[in-house]
Length: 364
Ligand code: SF4
Ligand code: SF4
Image (cartoon, rainbow, N blue to C red; front, side, top):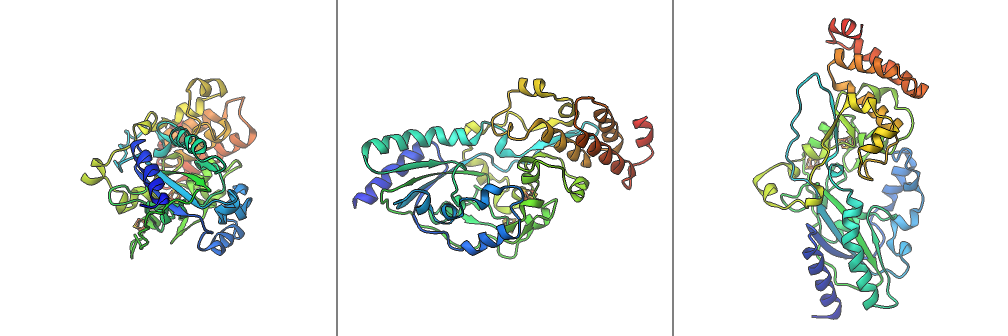
């Protein structure tokens, strides 16, 4: 066995022992189709995420991110097994949290196992670089994960792991100047003629292998800071933070005997699956602080949580939702923008076909 194979084998063994569901190594080279990334940015599909347009050279070539880099060690944690959510009784509207954010913050969970290994490797290989990234550096992490053999990219643009894993995966990397033997990729189309994720997307955000972030609920509930576009106010789904609809629809991510047998890392055990939307509308900074939300759930501001709750009420029983929205609009401590949004949403729900006469009486 050559030195590069020996070291690669040792590192992969250590990472498997640390509980990563998938591990692999790829060589450092520029991404295959930088022109597709450029066109996506040029068309504005990244929305407000200006950081995606910045550091373009690093994003397209990890050798720019870490000068002299030769290998990328790729890992994935599995955070769910595809079990469908149970929906509560009608009349008590709740807003769902995307599954990756229901347990501990994945940035911390991955980093606390990658950093000690990187530190040890730095000691053993003085002069070489080992740089850890967990969604924190301009790296095209899905492209590298595919090259390292962790999976394939579906039409929803997410990584689909080996059978049973689905796309319930969060990714991390160690970029290093050390030459490590790569693991084989399995490039093939996981989708064929399937269009389930495209059909299931509540906001029609997916074209094959391209997501329009500015239409994606994950982006609009987490990254987007401003007022929602008019069409987004008329959604009828219950996602409050993020969205799993395209993964849930994918046959590769289904809850099966095989998916149940594969371990889910315990750090992602769900602490918070959803929130009572009436409670969210009552939150203030103090009560939100008392909840002890994980760092990932603290990403949206209180104003954004209120906005998301107003919009998630689009799926709820109109009578109940209109009452909640009008009560929220009475709060003296909210912005004029939120007050206007709540009243617009209430007016839309009240005239929605099938809203019934209960709206007027419930709203008083
Ligand atoms: S996360 Fe939701 S809104 Fe975004 S592309 Fe997937 S299904 Fe569509
Ligand atoms: S739902 Fe179908 S089209 Fe979408 S990623 Fe899965 S297999 Fe591909």
